[in-house]
Image 1: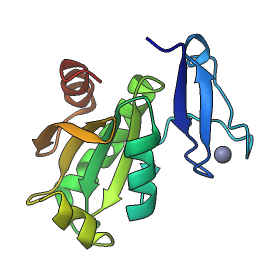
Image 2 (image 1 turned 45 degrees about the vertical axis):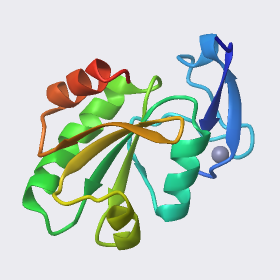
Image 3 (image 1 turned 90 degrees about the vertical axis):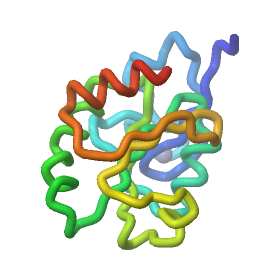
Image 4 (image 1 turned 135 degrees about the vertical axis):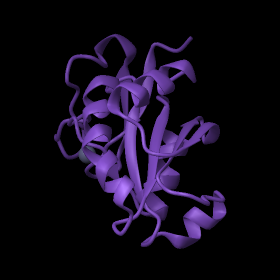
Length: 145
Ligand SMILES: [Zn+2]
């Protein structure tokens, strides 16, 4: 097992190398000096999505949503709450399926909200439907996040 983890900065997308033991000590980006974990999900476009799921050594939990979707908006504060509980062991991110239609087509997102968990660039679990923060945390941990 490696003792350093690659963490993609949510602000400038620089790939940081953080010793695993220091992950919980509010690490900052070596390039832009902002905190690597903010308690907020990262909003991703297609390019940012690819970088985050392929370059992070921690799992990435993605909420596929859309602004017009009522259940998505209801789940949004629950997802933020889950972010506070799952960071820094998991990166939480959001993809607006309306703005990123090619990306949601590529992943075959048929209903929203859909949560998908990625590790090492590969999808390892998926769950459609709105969830509470407790459900999100439990589901993520049950699937290795
Ligand atoms: Zn940065």
